[in-house]
Figure: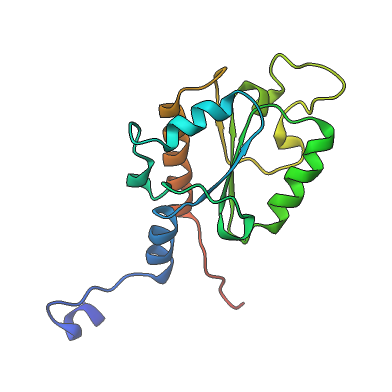
Length: 160
């Protein structure tokens, strides 16, 4: 029906959004913010045993201009929160954030005046990974949730 019949065999029609989101979801380049002990588990996530390469996240980008996924691993104090936010602002849109561990999500056992009680106070967090420290496969699960979110969002804007 429609354009599919006139093109014949060998042609595939799709929406630009679907194609763009599929490409973005399979090429999420993480920017690691390893601030505490969860960073050790994040290193294991990038190792060959858990094979993050099958999700397109095999290379950690230490330049915010080359990454589109920030992984905040560990507790954040108030002085570091400004630096993390500055790095977040330097990342190109669209971008996503994972709060890894109890400390990044809620402050964890560091309930004191110098620690931010959850990085969602200064960053828009898309996925939370619970645990102290969380296992690398839990981080893989959060990455799959981010991929699902990327695949369903609308990337192109319509002129209205």
